[in-house]
Length: 330
Image (cartoon, rainbow, N blue to C red; front, side, top):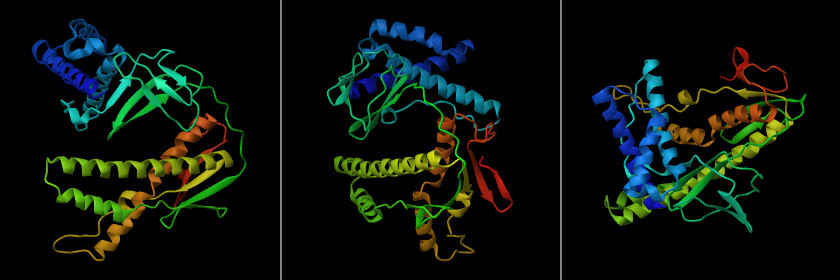
């Protein structure tokens, strides 16, 4: 798999060079389909082993580059900082997108699934639930440390949830992640700060560029990834339960960026209780309030099939509680 990433990263950088050269020499902006034809020549000559890899992953890398250019043009048009696409080192190439998927790409094998793609080793997939009996729309492989994660997207037909007359208000907090107006509480997120600090100190004691430092960095990354997945799943369980039980949800609107500002102050006017405020900021950010709100928005739309900002049927509405009254969550 690492050799495949090397080839795809080389393809990304070569495609970027082709676009830059075409514009600087001929004032021509290459499209995605023109680069698909250019890729055909590379595969015919088997440059960097691209001929031994399936066409889908290579086209997926070109699509990522095209999306980077589309975002660049959009920012230029809007008068924002352009952020021209740049060449990527191998350390930033950790994702493989499969654009051409057939019925045999993902197959059940006993208690697990297998992903079969030309040029790839057979990859075993383990999940918490069975996959739909359909062809996946997209497959993305991401390298996380020593392991690979697969993200599969399916198009399935789902009926909207029935209308609910019950309403609930949500108070976001630190001692409890959420407190509902009916008295129900959701436990706060807990992090092992001591273990994290101990591992960070172990990284700091290592010599930069050493093998031992690389191992310590990978161990710290695994810990942070496990905590992220655990808290994300906890948010999913809570928001799914709320969506299925209530028809109107009022969410407390909090200015998290202002709430988590440092109390350090300036040299002329130093702040007070800086360490205590820093600890409070960490606890606020660890509760994932923004993630909870975004999941409520996404699930309300997908489960009920209506818009949140302009609800047409009144089945569900997410509003924000402010000092001025009620308003839609923007």
